[in-house]
Amino acid sequence: MTYTSDTRFTPSTLATAVEEVTTLFNCLSVDDKLGLLWFIYTETGRSITAAAPGTARLQLAEGLLNQVKALSFDEQLQFMRDLVANVDTPLTRAYGVFSPNTKLGFWYQLAELMKQGFVVPVPPGYTLSRDANRVFEAIKALDFGQQITVLRNAVVAMGVDPLAV
Image 1 (cartoon, helix red, strand yellow):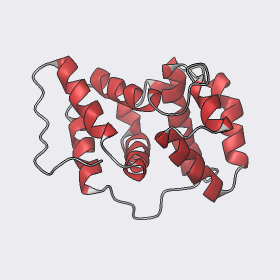
Image 2 (cartoon, rainbow, N blue to C red):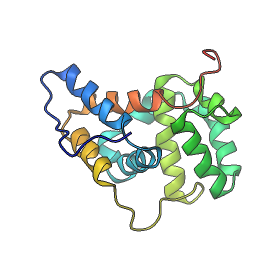
Image 3 (cartoon, rainbow, N blue to C red):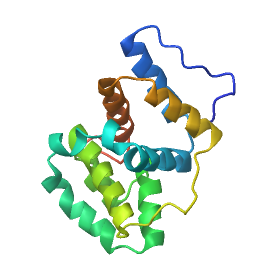
Image 4 (tube, helix red, strand yellow):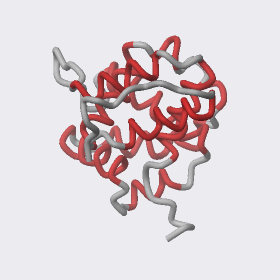
């Protein structure tokens, strides 16, 4: 699903701003969501996601991160797409049991592994689509706490919670 070019980010309250930007994110395609997450974590991650690793219990995610690193680049990309699309696989179920902060930290670590070459990198010269760039601009317009909330909302909705199936 996509949103029209007339979509505007005009929040009336703090909660509404987070809801609006989360909704805009959720309207993106799977690949646009992946690209936007990568862009946020790697290009602006120092300011937007500085709190993620410190608040998450990343030792809980270490096993899944190691499993992802052991996959081929094609399999890693498919895992990320499955995660975003909520496809039920053993790896997306493993992610599904993480706490919200661990999920946030997982994506931060995944971006770090991408930068280090252990996980499939984003193609050189990658640019955000028009729709993803609009969401990125909306995220940048939020204050730090709202940015973290939008990211948390995005990553919490990913994967498959095996306890809820």
